[in-house]
Image 1 (cartoon, rainbow over the protein chains, first blue to last red):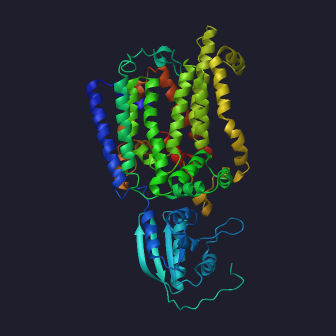
Image 2 (cartoon, rainbow over the protein chains, first blue to last red; image 1 turned 45 degrees about the horizontal axis):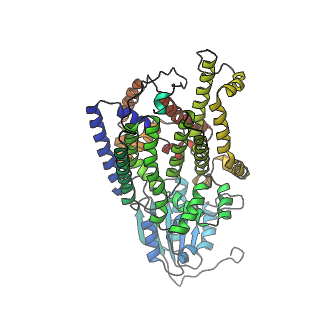
Image 3 (cartoon, one colour; image 1 turned 120 degrees about the horizontal axis):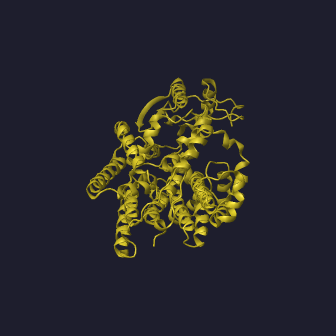
Length: 179
Length: 377
């Protein structure tokens, strides 16, 4: 930046004034677009997504978060009661390997969703194919358990989907798997 | 008289010719005007940073920093040792959150503060290395730069790193040019704080090290009546240390700057998993992305540095202006035939560090994609 300033300072007055004016105008225009254009490539609608979950959350709801490493976002934005019912998908085995084969996911989701009849599926990082697949498998499992989509909010780089099923659905869990 | 104009110029590998002293356009003659201008630029920079501080959500790295800074200090330090960042920023953020709060604005205000401090510091750097006019232009560019405004508003350590890097850069230049030994202390403190804020600060120091060693060996060669710029062999190192006191002082100051690492690095090295280049998304079930130095990246990085971040279509259009960028590089290269000592120093600081990043990036490709790599521009 100092070298660039040095380059500018060595110019004759006319080109200097031209370049300096262009620089100031371009910078201010870029600043305005960067700040207010909602389609900015590095903007994430995390605040809006968490506000949807926060305002619609009811006691007993489960929040499934995909991928698991973004949990600091809901931890920051959600009320503690909602965050306590957040489950990260997928879980990891003892060797640190993600349990995300369809069978493993189904087994874990059974336990994570438990008796909840309302499930918030919060997914981000969907440009990563493996993470997008985890979301697809999770959504497919929810549908297979008679959950249906009642609200879908595809926001910028994050998506919040609310699933619901019959509040009186049967729920059994293998005692050996309950943790 | 100004140091930049009085000292002999020293090469950084190519033949360097002294630049004729530029008349001082500021300094003692117009201190009030300088002060007013820098204050006005700083206020404009502060306004741009504060006005849009809340126009975007927190993203993963910010909320992770807040989570870590919200823990107790021992808990946080234990975690940081197992993480990719040194602990200074998180430690200060910990106390900031306790004193100010943890809302989006509260937390980002910490980064904004460093971003604002950097503006007059940039003026000081430009004035010290060249003159008042360069200082004013450099601080104005920094104040208005959308890229730096973006990072000033992010609850991360990058603006803090910039402040310490600028401080170390100016202090080293002053120390090398006879402004008093206290500048070695300032250099050591700035360098230490920089490294403990972001490991990438080490690349700035590496570039400076290259400059100091080359300058010292040239001085030593001149003392022996030789015109050689580089030391002829490693056996010249000891005599050079004897003959060039500034090299000794630089070694002492650099060693002092590394002292915090003596405490910190053993904790980090006890976690070898950090060096496998796997974290976050890459731990998720996929291999780390195979990155390289792609043409698109080479163009994208300076475009981001100049224009900030925008919608995809705008970014694509900006990147498509690459022929213009390359033309500017050639024009600048043509103008750089005659390098002053200050220019050689800054070029070594910038290019030397960038070369080290590229070299390390071949070993750990993720280094090339990390934000501080972009931020160095």
